[in-house]
Image 1: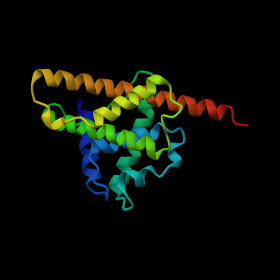
Image 2 (image 1 turned 45 degrees about the horizontal axis):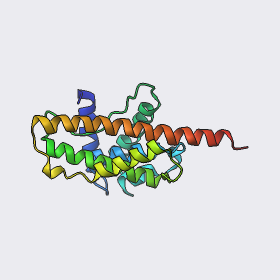
Image 3 (image 1 turned 135 degrees about the vertical axis):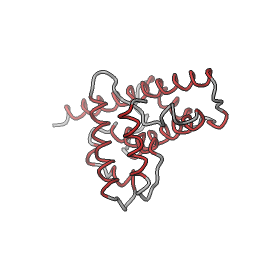
Length: 183
C-alpha cells in the first residue's frame, strides 16, 4: 500500500470511529464503491448509510472526500480503483483477509442500497457478483501468514478490483444508455 493510501485508510478509520455505525474502513469504502455504481448516487443519502444519523464534521469531510475520490477513480480510464485495505507491512495476513471480506460485504450492501440488482446483468457481471459474494464469506481465520497465502491474497485483491470495475462499468454504462433514451 502506498503512503497516501495508507494515511487515507488511517484517516477514514479515525473518522469511522466517530460515527454511529463504527464500520470498518474497508467496509465503508466498499459500501461507497457499491453506491457509486448508481449513476445518480449523489442524490442518495450515502453519508447516513455509511455513518448513521449522527455525523461529526470530521466524518462528514472524510466520507465526502472519499466519495469524490472513488468517483474520480472509477471515471479514470486506467483502472485506478484502489481498495481501502490495511497496510501489508503493518497488518498480518488474516486481518487483511478479514478486511477484504468486509470490503466485499460493504460493496454488495452498497449495490443493494443503491437499488442495483443483477436481474438484467450480463453473464460476466453476474459471475463477478457471485464471486464477490463468495469472497465476502471467506474463512479468513484459516488464512496462514505464509508466502503461498500471501500470493493468493494479492491475486484475490486484484481480482476483486477488476470485478468491481466490470460491475461499475456495466451499471453506469446501462444507466447512461437508459438516460439517453428518456424523452
